[in-house]
Image (cartoon, rainbow over all chains, first blue to last red; front, side, top):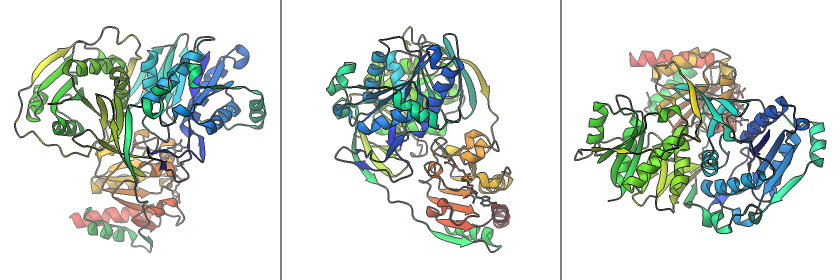
Length: 266
Length: 317
Ligand SMILES: Cc1cc2nc3c(=O)[nH]c(=O)nc-3n(C[C@H](O)[C@H](O)[C@H](O)COP(=O)(O)OP(=O)(O)OC[C@H]3O[C@@H](n4cnc5c(N)ncnc54)[C@H](O)[C@@H]3O)c2cc1C
């Protein structure tokens, strides 16, 4: 099987995150491989391993689009066990919205399909910076592929995939022919940590760098010029500050109700 | 007048509050047209009239529910093209966002998710980076597709009701070909409590409840609140995953959020920090949740919650 996993380099949520510049793009210093994409990578590795791993010709290609630093997301994926890495990078990509991002990623996937068909494209359920969840479905639409989003389990049998998705009131089983695009939730597995062997092995794996020219995309189709949405204004919300803190002396439940009554919340 | 297309999926016998909100919002932007999927019950039909809907579109195909989103997006794209709508409004559920995503590509239209307000010129407001920024965004394409969060518009019937006509829209042939098929669907049991995403009050429990959600549920019921949970609590299987609040769970924005036995990790805060008032009960005074609580109690939830519940019942008589 040939599986492409989309891995995004995102600002670490443990620190304050900021929008910068005239066009309010995300400040990408202190970025890491999105935690939600680790679940996608783990799902791909498990599918490949169940089929005999790389020795049996299974490929797990980690693909990241982003500035120079995004190569770190690819490197971490290789340490976890991806067989190859691809870094799509070009100045002109900066500031791409979901539509422009899906355009570039679709072209990159097509390019990677030139030397053998791609069976599956797996992504996380959302990026932890933009949080829109739009890209997986847009990528599927652009490639004319079925999409299964928010999968909480995933299995491939012959040329079909079977997945489970949970909504508020229902739980569904869905099936799609391959190739397909799948996004997975954090319920699907427990991502592995790179071990020492993985870290050493990653050093020998190749990372291919692709530019817009390599994937046949014109600079005007991506970045700010190719985006279909613009951020006109952004204001930082004042951070929440701590209020009154009390220690229970046997009557904190009553004090809590007093507080709710004072706030007219009863 | 500009046409605004509102997608309403399987309303059953009555429109949901979030659908009424979409219809109310649509009227502020132009002439409202509904693209319906599923049966059109007579009560729903009269609500459409009350809300000033000019046209009700229905798909030529009956089997859209057998597939994941792709055919619904194809139907909506056809509906938007037929009516010349310049704005499409959908709810902000995961499915609503996915339909919007595919629809955006089909219509060459910018998509904005998590919208809380829309100005007459189409500028949409939303918060990003887990509630740390409020932004104004705009689609710079002829058509814009917006998914709107519930509870940000007060539903209101139109000043003058309409007499909507019903029109069938041809679902493009082949739109199910590249779609995933739903082969089984299980209905989950309803809790009878308010819906978490649009509840006015949420009482949430974490690992600190140690397997016993009783005190959390009793306080929630005394307050008429929804029950939420941290991921640690849902992962432990103490409560359904649907109750999870946070980055990978639900985003809630209630008047009051009571956090009990939750440490307040960044991924949990991401889902609740836009609550108006936050109350935290936690044994450990060092828990990060106290950094954002308006009222914090350092104490054992098994003492504090039942006492509060009893006091509320006493005061309410
Ligand atoms: C990719 C990713 C996504 C995530 N998404 C989410 C998400 O959507 N939502 C979410 O919640 N988490 C999410 N998490 C997990 C998150 O990081 C935390 O692990 C989780 O929120 C911790 O839950 P908790 O506070 O209940 O448990 P803990 O961190 O174990 O805290 C339990 C707290 O209970 C207190 N306590 C114990 N007993 C009592 C008592 N009797 N009375 C009062 N207090 C008591 C303790 O002092 C402690 O502070 C995610 C993590 C990752 C990596």
